[in-house]
Length: 97
Length: 368
Image 1: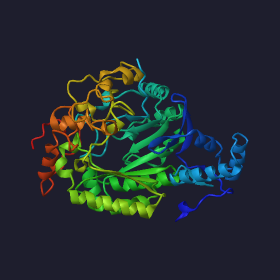
Image 2 (image 1 turned 30 degrees about the vertical axis):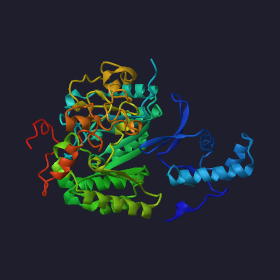
Image 3 (image 1 turned 90 degrees about the vertical axis):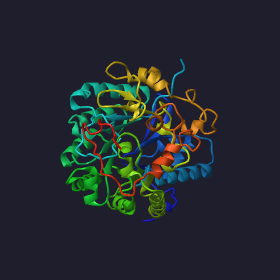
Image 4 (image 1 turned 135 degrees about the vertical axis):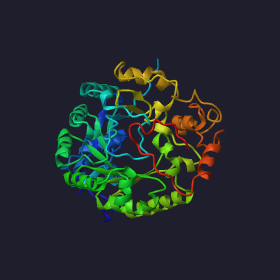
């Protein structure tokens, strides 16, 4: 299987793999990705994207939602969304529905 | 006083009882008896305290944690507090019913240990006949349920040749991660060092095998490789620094900065029976003793890497130099580094018999 090297598109739909989730830590006031054997910090922009990953929305829809909140161009945003989600899929945090 | 950042993870050693007898077990030589174990109510309170202070992940371990019938209750409570729950198990007590109780409770992940890919050798190393079939069935059930699975293999001179077979096994069983972790030499591992320590050539072969497998697996199966630090030039940043990221609670309720800390003499070990976890983490002398860099002797004190490796492992310094505040002798700058070279040079050609991990078996003075 070579599924991991393909880039995502605006049509891709993702969900969190079982055993991983996004979690807000009230003690440290930071978002974390909880995953097997490790928790790692989700930076603020990653946290914004990941809060919209629900196993139903396409990455295009995720981008449109983010556009309502941030003053970036759609081209920039879509690039960030596709790039970051691809990286997290390679880390087995997200998977294609 | 300045608040110390809270720990990221808690290793909950709920019991030292275990059907296996692995000669490199990370439990202390003096095992806690069942009668001294914390009650369910104690553990529930400890989990409350851990979540409140900022612990993010709880690793239920042992011994064999599934030997405690209240494990699903502890997992359910941890899940309700938002803690990430990991079960570190030998798998020999796992069946469809006991797994369902844990998944119903919300368990997030399982780390399943194997002693070898070869059945006869695995059962000789673990000291339990029939264990391998139980473990393979456990892996199948976990995979069937869909829980993420990590396989753990502890590597030493008597199984290093089968690392390729272990990696194939992880792939075949559908693991998401596999740990190829060379033995660390304290406690039982140190007692059995001559029977376990690989040669440099064996170590390098495992490194090459892992590098090749990483290229083959890509991102679908992650490999965590842990080196035997006797062959490293720099010490490992043990526990990410003493009292910085990690808490360990022993079956009796003692709170430790690492699972080997009980070996350090002359210390008072704080317990959850007497103090809160938060108070212990912030103030207990055991935790403040080697936290940060103030305690360091030279060459650590003036070393550029002091905030990377934190002086290495205190328990290893103690075990090999007699002084827990010495530089970890694994460091090639350490005054005590000769003992590491000597241990490698004196490695016998034929490994001696294992001294198995059993109640009472670690309390005799090592005669060799």
